Image (cartoon, rainbow, N blue to C red; front, side, top):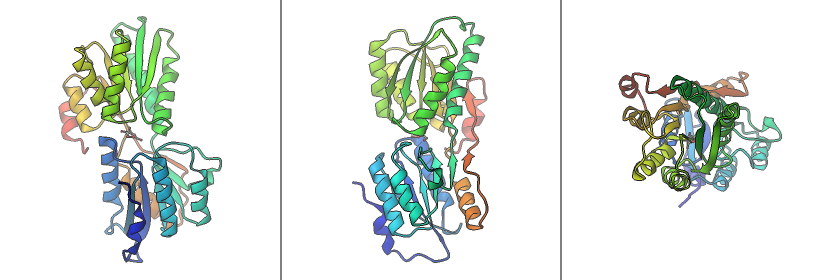
Length: 314
Ligand code: AHR
């Protein structure tokens, strides 16, 4: 069951440490686990921090509760990885009134007053979506299929999350530039393997002419691959469907090596070091940029996957 971080207030905290309350979305994906580990490995006592971590189990109301608890605990900083973009104005206003700086990580928010957070260490989700679209353009052209009708289905991440909104916006923007690309349907997969599988099963029953699957994270992709194979179909280079994914965790690169994924657009989960550095800069009174994007790349089967997999940290 969800238990709030408030119980941790009883612990004596070394006053030299910077106390940071971290409100995490959940543990819905391989990516999320890698990002949580990165934050935990960076906000350590050796590095000058005392971290209070709260896993909201994919519920915004739990994140709001956690932030209220951090305010009561008088933490020095609040780090928020917001499950969705909207609905944060009141609680962030409370944090501002308590003079606790809020730092966004990974995902973005939509608030009326952007002074409600001091900075953000986030992903450019729209760019990821656009890059997937550009990659598909290029791939179809190389295959001499640029003038064919291309039927696309999309598995969407958690509705309202900046990762879902941004990737959808970026990809559909490029798709809209091609009259012959048709998005048959967009179905929610909530960034989880089980929901990705379920939604892919639904789509396969409905359409027998899918050319491309755009799956907004790797775990939904793993579920979708299972559904496709169970239906006696195939995806990846040489398969019935082109499979494009996001995150690029090691297991996805292995699936790519096995011929099940065509391209994967990295979402870099190693955000802890940048977050720790940002807090230290704020502590030193430095001006910090409002938006700090994490650097990212992409992977496809033209690359030396063996070496890339060996070097993959997550
Ligand atoms: O916000 C980042 C996204 O959230 C990742 O793509 C996904 O795996 C996670 O659940």
